[in-house]
Length: 400
Image (tube, rainbow, N blue to C red):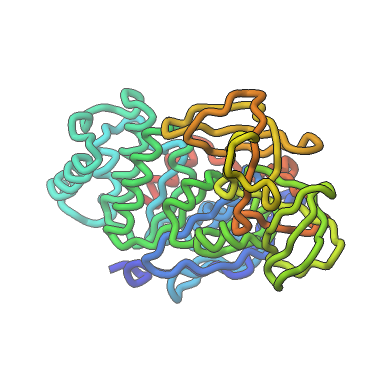
């Protein structure tokens, strides 16, 4: 039985991390992951997500605040429990496999601290490799495996001991799209099968939404929103959250009338009228930005019959088109050079085609213009610590 009572909760309370020279990677981050649930931390490069997961894993010391697994404190300003004492498994972006061990030995190594007989360790490792479809590669060394095969070995190693707590540091970012999708399903299925409390970090919004019970968004070292994926998508608290969770684009507008506390009718460039909703109070005549979800936009040829051109529409011109298997995504230039991208249609509209765009108000989100246009990547706030390959190997030995 784990010191933390099986699958523990994770509680992060007012955690900050400042590196030498005063570089701040995390500022007053607080959240809780319920025992047995799956939480994803989403953010761009430099948002602090890698620093945060390393603090939770025990690979970094916190500067302020506390981290608890269940009722036990594992990190604080004056306390730092070693990684090997935290009873967790971690899957790294760069696999962190032992190069001198076969795939089978890498997986079996994770059971070494369980005081199991060697034969039993081998049997369990073989079973997990078979689950990953790697049994035929069990005697190969990491350098003889593809990137996807190495990552499946790393996942098998993390899961074989049926840990109560699992951490994932962007494990799929180096893989091709098809393999990413297949391994995403494996991670979702297997972590829930073992009942582990799971914390996963990524910069990929679609990956986060597909995996998570809850998603937290980090912006320049701060946790700016934490909620269920559908709430995060429909009710972003900041323009940064809205942009990072997927937009077709944004358009300038002026509030013309407020119909309710959550819905307004806006004048776009003084000529077009669109309905949208706001999560913050707005005033008549206030300058705003309409942040538009791609799924909220439908398009038709400008001269098509039966199309209402009076309200909730904008005219534009197709500037680019891409085939996406089930249909086509378009880039459309509307008035004053503003562009909306990712506009889906089952039929192809050629470049230069005049089109009419209609909008679903539920996918049009208003923010005051003074909210600013936050950069998705802030170079000066890049994580100041990077794990070397050697450190990853050592870490995987201590926490797998």
